Amino acid sequence: MVKILVSACLLGEKVRYDGGDSRKVGLLETWQAEGRVIPLCPEVAGGLPVPRSPAEIQADDRIINIEHEDVTDAFERGAQKALELCKHHQIEIAILKEGSPSCGSSLINNGNFDRTKIPGQGITTRLLKANHIRVFSENELDQVAPLINPSD
Image (tube, rainbow, N blue to C red):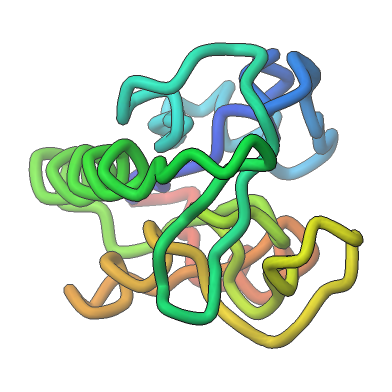
């Protein structure tokens, strides 16, 4: 059976920086019911609390929170844990939360804490892609569906 790494917030887990979730209903619920989904919040896995201060990737690739604290190490630990899960479960596909400094697959915040999105990838996405894991956002489930074979 094909397993998929999924951002825990997309499954309704209250792990976002603000203590909320980004629940996405539909295919994710179906795949979860089939036992295909391995949930993870890289930021929590890296040791950050819920709630936590918003953080953004800066021009020098450091991740700084709104209080000017460098939280790069926690983000990198979480990305490494995501990669370990993928290796353990032989996962080749991840569905991660767009816009996140961990999980963004095509957009991230600009680093100025003004909610402006720019092209870019989060730390976890970068590491997974560097290890040949295909990363999609929650907006690309239609591209993932053909890759999931219910008869496997």
